[in-house]
Length: 164
Image 1 (cartoon, helix red, strand yellow):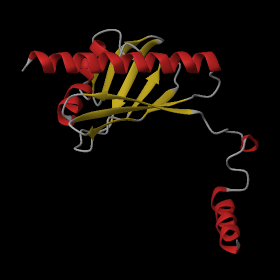
Image 2: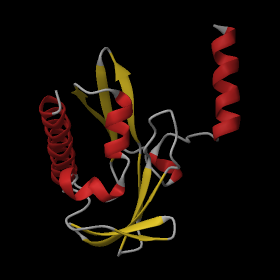
Image 3: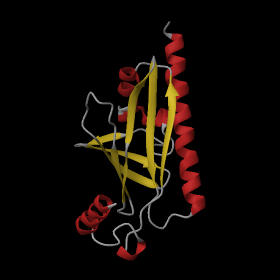
Image 4: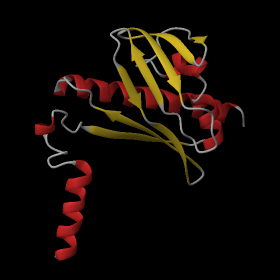
């Protein structure tokens, strides 16, 4: 019991009392971890999904037109207007995190991964609820991501069956 109190006291000092409450001014955000199994090798899934030029094929929630490069960023027409997207550097870990800067100036961080799952891959997108988003808007965002993940699965699994 004493050990638990010491840990709680340390956390209160490190985080600040009330760090996880709305009293600090920035409430914890709702998070939804959305994933889908794709019957393809993780390297193949990563190669396709990490290429921003492929986004219009599967990520209608982000890219509704061709994308163009501007330095390290990619510019695209998103549902809410022009978006500037910066992806994590290419890596062998399947990390495809990306920041989306909207015309409004708001930047949204989107964690995204592809991980081995048996003989296929698990594609994981973490949807973080942004401040001021209603329950209905968050549900719509979730549905849009789920639809995009299903489209990605369909594209990759169809191209796999066609190449056999």
